Image (cartoon, rainbow, N blue to C red):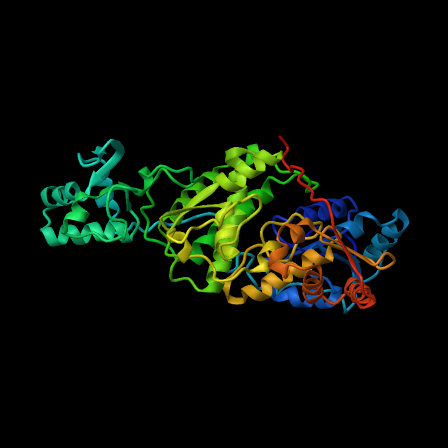
Amino acid sequence: MEESADKAVGRVTVYSIQGCPHCLQAKATLKKLEVPVCDVDLGRHPELRATVKELTGRSTVPQIFFNNIHVGGNDDLQKLAPEELQRLVSVVKEVPLPADAPPLPEQDQSEHEAGETDGEFVCEKDELADLVADLKHGSVIGSQRRGLTLYKKSFSGAHLVEWLQKEKGMAMAEACNTGQALLEKKYMVSVHGSGQQDGSFGEGKDSMDTLYRLLEDDPHSALNAGQTASCTPLQAGELSLLLREMILKLFSEHLSADGKSVDYKGMSANPVFERYCELAIQLQRVELLSLSREEKLAFFINIYNALVIHGALRLGVPTNIWQRYRFFNYVSYLIGGEVFTLQDIENGVLRGNRKGLAQFCRPFSKTDPRLQVALPHVEPLIHFALNCGAKGCPPIKTYTPQDIDSQLRTAAEAFLENDDGCVVDSGKGEVRLSQLFKWYKADFGSTDENLLNWVLEHMGDSPKKTSLQGVLSAGKTKVTFLPYDWSSNSTH
């Protein structure tokens, strides 16, 4: 919470979240007015979300009050007539703060509560990390031939066991158990097509003949590949929260003063980004199969939103349809020993393995090990949590499994409050919806009727909801879709 110094007797209260461009633009406008501004970050103080919703009837941020007078969001602030804005400034400067002014957080609460991170990560070295480091510098890894195919940077099970016996003094049984541990902890993977693929390692001929690679040597394009994750694996939820918080803080630091553009070049040169990349490496060996539905939702939403920014830093922001297709099908992380692209996360995991835009088949085949991670059913609400491109953001920046369904519903309400999410034209009996509802219509019930009922059910109590109810009760509602804004927010 920040407050500018001034002689005024009242205050302007802004409820915002970190990384929200509309919040930043609103605060830049208020700064020019030379009034005291209390900025309350609802990401740090989620206990105030319900109160703000009750006071404003809205689920979006920013929400702005001049003393106890609710102005609305950033759009509402920017549209104020000069004389009305001056009247509000006079209220703050001349009228004492009333008793029913919007609340602030408790003064003794830390600005760095649970979930906040300064980007520091202390690595507790895994018990097998030194052995893997020795293996990398030994004589085991090389090029192996199977038939006509040459497998680079690989080694057979027999070579590994022999090395463990000779260099580490292990007995046969201990060497095989170590090989199994290296597989289970995802330090190494079996090379596709070179032998058994069931994830077991033993004294049998199949294991001895099978070729393996260290995970970092397995060829793929993941942005967090190329180095071994040598730390003791963190819990998946804890790691996703750290990553999301760190890159969002970095993103916020490089937003322009008006909140309209991002300096990705400066962001990539920031030392904090290097620390982020080091932390992202630890995703390689997280345990995913034991996650509950709620944990999967929170984990993969947070990782998706972080990966979008990481991809923009590494590859640039896509500016045309081909670049966007490549971006979402190419930008990836190595997670739990498997590669997940943005498409894989959205359509494979979060949509229950459904075909996405311009996809001819499901992301995961029946034999794909990633299918075990996919949610059993499509989760329509995830569409409103993956990034924030609307004119007002939900008051949530990172998602937690504890109340994930409530958080997702809040995100949906915030999206539908915006006119780039839903517009109700009572005069024409028409409802104009975001392209998201057209692209993923099957997730919302397939038919126009089911789609409109879903929208109505997930709207917060507002005049827009009353208008929609009126249009639907009149019958023969026309559904059209709004154009989607693909414009880049990069300064370069």
